[in-house]
Amino acid sequence: MNKRVILILLGVLFVLTLGGFFIWKSQQSTAEVSTDTGIESKTKENNNNYPKMEEYQVPILMYHYIRNAEGESELGKNLSVSPDNFAAQLAWLKENDYTTIKMSDLADPEKLAISKAFFEKKKPIVLTFDDGYQDAYTEAFPILKKYGFCGTFYIIRGYVGDSNYMNQEQIDELKQAGMEIGSHSLSHPDLSTLGLDDVKTQIFDSKKEAASFCYPSGKYNDGVVALIKEAGYSSAVTTQPGIVDQNSNLFELPRVRIENGNGDYLAERIKAYE
Image (cartoon, rainbow, N blue to C red; front, side, top):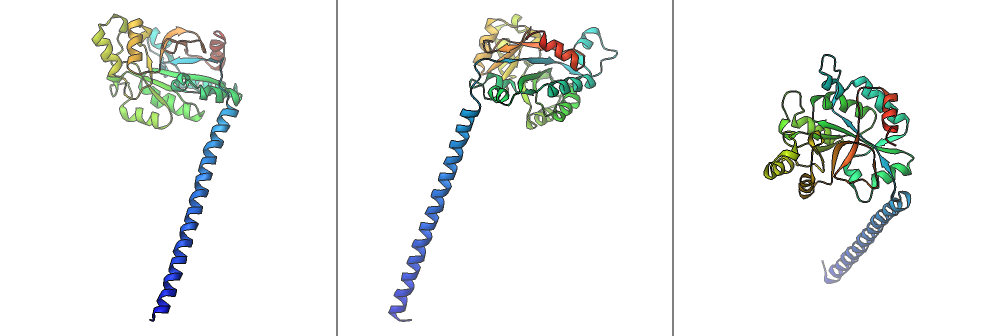
């Protein structure tokens, strides 16, 4: 091969390499523009379509057992909602344009989930389940999924895996399905009567991934609230009756206690606090 042919081939190779570089550069620029435009459009959509709600009401419903309670004590019956009635209550919520949000959504300073709900002509509501009973997984979970709802489950961490309580695999499955896992302490004591170190252990050691705390039996004091904040929780619920609004204290949130009744019963319970 003579020198001239070699020079021609090198020239062709250079041109091809240079052309390929410019084509690649052009594609990269286009991709960056597309990505930026997508982010910008999404941000613009959120800002324009979901203006932050400055005034709102959000009921937090309080459940314990989802079970048939025949043969149980009076207290056990009062803490129980049958699976059929629970399904009827969720059906009523669906028919009346309620949409569920998590406790973490309620505590969000931007109120994105609440704002989105109102924009879509829905009424936000939170469903909470105390203690981490086995029927939260076997009964409540399938019905929640049927209606496309989510719940916040307050787990007594020291009871995980015990008889009649959910095990960790079941709790993980709830979380993977979009449910929220909150803390209900290690052993459900009256926190208002414990010493500082014991209260701190109950609050800190039960936190795990939880963003919300549920005061056992609704008992707490200012010192307990201070430790809840120190532990990094963003909200805490009580057993005080009422509906949350924009002026509610995120660490002393009221709830609506739900007992065994159908959809009409649930409507009356919610309307009683509006």
